[in-house]
Length: 186
Image (cartoon, rainbow, N blue to C red):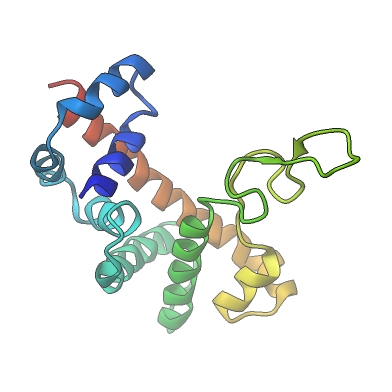
């Protein structure tokens, strides 16, 4: 439960002043944090449980919820998705894998800085993440997850994946603002 509390407080820290967040670490009980999740819509709630609480058993529900949102988005953007339910599911799964993978760069362990070796000129930015500490999947990996060729992914599917990632970003923003209202502003 401590992991949940620290992850959710880190999530709310994006919109809260640092000193207030440091005070909040001792201020909230686990029960308050769990109760603050109660008012969320299904999508952001499932996303929080999967990403921040580490509950892998909600992935199927999350995929169904996200696929429903993607279908609405696809219809709104005049994307023909007649019998493409398998492609939609693959696209949503790819977006979720990309989102979860986007959390920490492996070579620098999420710091964004590579330690200098003996005889080198000190520390430098990580080449894989360009100093951000996070990386996303490469295009050929995303194409493989979607079950399409790399060329087809670049022409067609990359834009669609961007739409799915926008939905997930909206859910993360909803989650962050909801948690900020419930925990920080009470």
